[in-house]
Image 1 (cartoon, rainbow, N blue to C red):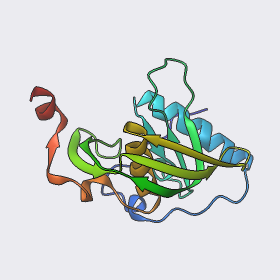
Image 2: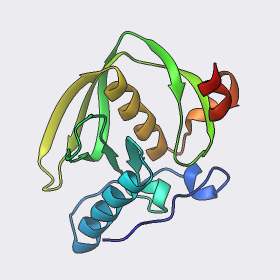
Image 3: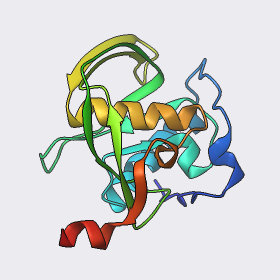
Length: 161
């Protein structure tokens, strides 16, 4: 396993659409393990493969409070259903030090494949829904900064509020 470099806003790869994963190779497994290590090293709750420079439709989500939790690995995720609405601050490992208020669904149903390419359907709300939507946006070359209501702020200024 190895830490991967997080691509920062302005890097053209972050604006590209990621490609579907049709088979799991040793390189794919290595990418997923590296993404896990990178996610936790950066104290993130979600990470898309494109954020480490790989245009594959893979995201990791870990919104649990448990110390030894494993992230949910979602390959080729598709949001099938949304419900409700929530507004809240979002940040991104690719936009360090910044945050902004974004409107997202309160609940999502997401279909994806696990690391064995088996079909899985999950439902979640709150921070899980927010994180899944945020990471799925990355797979289509979209970043949360384009969804911010109002202005993008420095994280430090929000923490002082």
